[in-house]
Image (cartoon, rainbow, N blue to C red; front, side):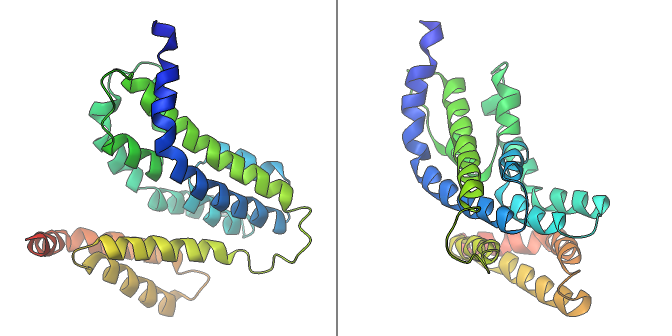
Length: 237
């Protein structure tokens, strides 16, 4: 029956999200605890996880919320950090076309992990494609919200010091960088990122280097796009 299509789609989609659940729960808990150690109300991590749903951006937002009010800088930072979703959206245009009311939810709830699953998995022919995509998206969204909520509650009662917990954000970006480095056939993009970061750190200092770094990386990648693509093609051969 048509109304029961969501059940087999849930059973088919859930196993693909189990590795994401493990990572999101622990990262979300660390984020929730970090927010509490910075003095935010327990509802803040939950609401931010529900509305922003961007792990790296949410970690950066912790420091932004603790800094001087700078809406323009915050907006630009958010756009630069999450700009990759523009390309995710383009890649998913055909897959998400014609799914009716599910499409806005799929667009709003897209993250790296949901994109990876929905883009790469061949949905079985007997499974409703729209419901499969929707369950993958909603489950991953729920894992992150649950982790952040649990962490926010734990942050108020943890019996041990949480000094230095904000290093979780640094560790997360280091892991992302190493993952990208290992996947690359050539390392031009990563080296550009390292060079721009080091240069901007020296010029602008630790408090103001982030935005110039993002802009410099974007400009360098745009200028060197063709040489990088040529080097990548040569490496693949």
